[in-house]
Image (cartoon, rainbow, N blue to C red; front, top):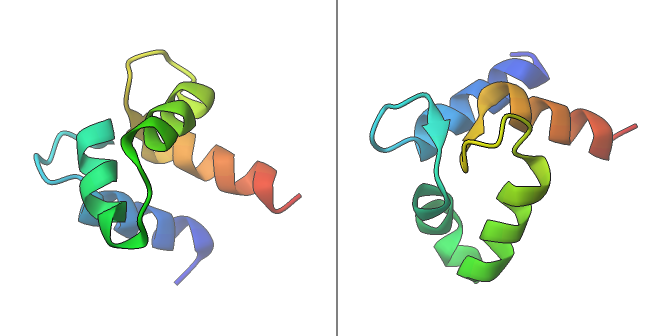
Length: 70
């Protein structure tokens, strides 16, 4: 499984309403066990939300991880 496939699987897991994007609510729910607060999640989305829709799609998440590991 490629890195991109892993990210697509992650998006599918977090995307509870099957919209193809991950909202702040879905991300908070998915990261809740890690103790990530809502303000941190919202800031993360705002920073990486390329198209400005308030949610992250698979391509935006892929771009984030690609930049992180450069």
